Length: 274
Ligand SMILES: [Fe+2]
Ligand SMILES: [Fe+2]
Image 1 (cartoon, rainbow, N blue to C red):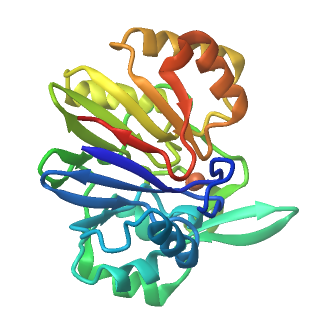
Image 2 (cartoon, rainbow, N blue to C red):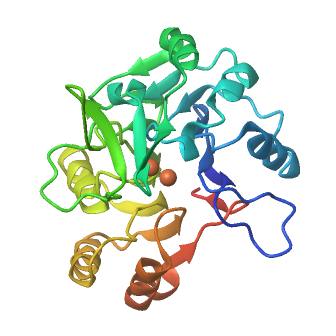
């Protein structure tokens, strides 16, 4: 079991990889290899795959954490690259997402009607957990959400003709079987990491060995970060490989709490999970 960060905002110093605001992971398992998110641009995904010697890797399926373009921008190209791969997501993936910046409305994901139509026949969408390959599944829609979600104030969707705060009902994470335990792989975790952890715990009681990916903690208050630390202490102290939208402040808080258990996860990071 191996997770490779193909695309992230950051790359390691001196790396031949390209950085881009977005995320993509390659998850290799005995049951098949899965691309989780594809990053913002095909040219970055392809460059990094080549630089890592992974361009010929067989891909059994794609999975998309949510609709935002930093995770799906390369999707049209990825559908061509992997023509036989189904695409796993929550049903909310197909809804166009928007962003309001400086009073201007901008598309933030899934504006391309032709792409949505093309995706249709290959989409495996469910609100419930779905097995992607043996030992790797989706969380399904993260609900309920008793804890603060990972929102950005400028994110919008249209509901009944009105622009409203994005509810992030498209957000899903992945759960990977790792020996006797599990690893949680997040995209942006807009649903909130504690909500996602609570859902995971309602679905699976095995030890959590790792949390990988973007956790959207930039806007979390100090009190929320402290509560997250306590929630993680209640786990069997997973290793944390954090990147993308986690935020440096949150990374610092978690590193102070858990030391070397917490590391950054720039593009090119390879996580061997046995
Ligand atoms: Fe996002
Ligand atoms: Fe993101």
